[in-house]
Amino acid sequence: MVTDPIADFLTRIRNAQMAGHRIVEIPASNLKKRITEILYDKGYILKYKFEEDNKQGIIKIALKYDPSTKQPAIQSLERVSRPGLRQYAKPADFTRVKNGLGVAILSTSKGVMTDKEAKSQNVGGEVLCYIY
Image (cartoon, rainbow, N blue to C red; front, side, top):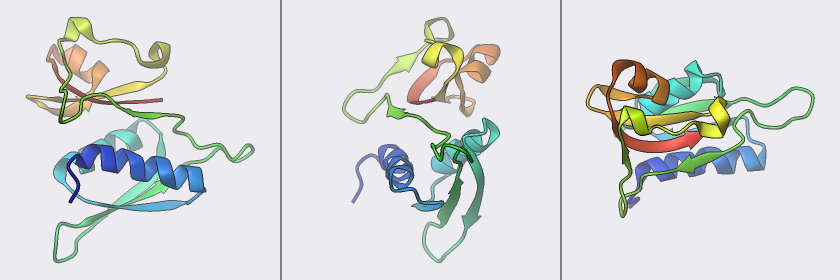
C-alpha cells in the first residue's frame, strides 16, 4: 500500500527517466490525471493515455527526451507538501520555481493548477510539487 500516491507518481517518472525508458505506466486517480495533463500542457512529456481496466485504471506516459543529447525534458521532480507536513501558500507567497523557468503544481479549491494559473485567479492552496 502506498501512503503518498503523488510521491509515488513522481518517483515512477523519475526512475523511468533515469533508466532511459520511453513509456511509464502509473496507477490512475483523478489527481494524477490532472497532474499528467499539466505536464503535457507545459511540454514536459510527449503524450499520455488513460486506459481503463476493471480496477482503477492506468496512465501511460510517453516521456520526452532531447534528440541530440538524450537528456530528459524534466530535470527535476520535487515533492513539496507531504502527508507528514502539508505546505500551503497564498497567491502573494508563491515562489518562482527555477527563476521562472519551472512550474509549481497546486491543489486549490478550484482544482489542480499551476502556480501562474492560481495567481491569475487569486486562489491559494496546497503546493504539491515543483517541476523544472
